[in-house]
Amino acid sequence: MTIRSSAPMPDSLRHFMRASQHPARSVPCPHCGAHAHRPCVLRKTGRQLPQPHPQRVSAWAQTTACCPDCQVEPTTPCHDEGRARTTVHNRRYQEAEATAA
Image (cartoon, rainbow, N blue to C red; front, side, top):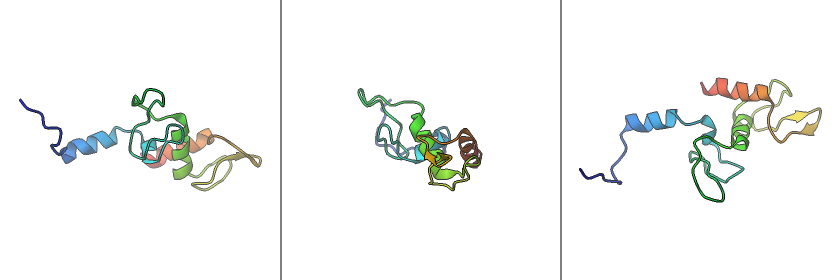
């Protein structure tokens, strides 16, 4: 049997592959520089990771959900009493996951 690498992927399989990916893959990774819809990689080895970096998940939550804790809209970074945070609040992660479901 010969396997052709240039054969098109069936739509049913393509949909399954995307459905099993973390929704954070829809944004670029600020940690490793992976493009949107591509897996995160280890910078030293280039090995693909099965899950996105935490910074990418935070960027995705910031892009897609409002924050119930600090009351900011999507794309606006979370803050604690006016001080910027490097990540988003946990409740914002929950909001983003609920939106993706």
